[in-house]
Image (cartoon, rainbow, N blue to C red; front, side):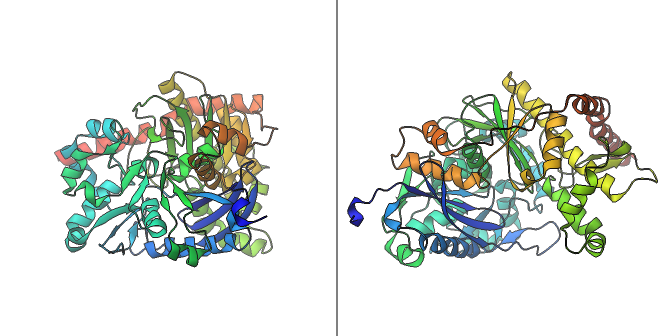
Length: 516
């Protein structure tokens, strides 16, 4: 069979996340055909700062693409789509070269600027326009920080590019990106599907300094000859507009209608559910969905797996490795925590180790541990962390259900935490909802591939592509009624009141201090 007659039925989902780039080739039945992965360094030049060299995004993309193209017949490739880390951005010069390191979504340097920005733009008006409450993870306040602290770089900036926009330019030579890749930046008017004139005027930048944005599934450009030689991709391969990695994961879990939510147990714990109605509410932030004319109501706990990592690295790591050098710290504590009773024998944790977004939107929030007694051990604390994340998820889900006026009947779980049987059981028991495990560990990449498949015409619509290319473990983790009832009592009588009580106390102290 000649190259001209080879069936083009393979898609590349290029998942450029915070820590690695994964290029995965999928077929139209959702089978993983080949994969390549390359790490991306994360730097901390100062406390609370998080940066990356944008050149590392491209280097990791090239390495991972070369790895997969060496494993397949490239003539079978039909299209490529990117699922990028969100809110992260980099200013570039006229040649498309970075003027400074990219500022990452988790960077907290711009927190002190938020009150003034909110006063100038209007908190509620900004929320209604962008779908996002004003928070420090957005690109907006970080661009303000550059303007105030690095004015030369601000003046030289030819473009401010999201991760996908930067990679699209590398791949195609065009400054283009997807609506769902840039709406998390907090600069996009989701009511009118365009860059916000009001926000850009406040920043003092022009629309020409941002990439052109397109709906999901639109072909943005083609792989150039130079890139083809560098990566092994065929020249002319279509590059399709995608959405951010969170929304892409939802599509990769077939969240294409109401009643279900995806749950990513990663560094952050992200949950999202489908709607066709644009609505703002403190219980969630709203993102473009992977399906045209759809949205995802999304909740986020920044201190999810981040809190577990803190426990392992700062509290338990050395002791655990000394005690059991052949077993991972997580595995050791997971096994031990299974023998701790639900409720961690009175120890309760609020997992705001990295501030809190919905529903409180408090950048100054911090974690809480209450109920310490002399008999408590590190195993109790580990279980309390898992349960605290579960209680917070229940808070998130209840808020979204109220906003939608409908129940979420099941959770589709993915991410590294989905490998923890204990964590998943705790989540099911606390939320009272069955948990289905995605059979695809790389749902963000699969979601990007689904958009590529639709974009190049292999499916009539995005839901059809998602149905054909996704599958779940058919046996759910079902809530245990007795444990669920016990957790409900703890949640309603204790957890719900902990942070509001502390927040009110701290606000009173602040008022007293200001008046004295």
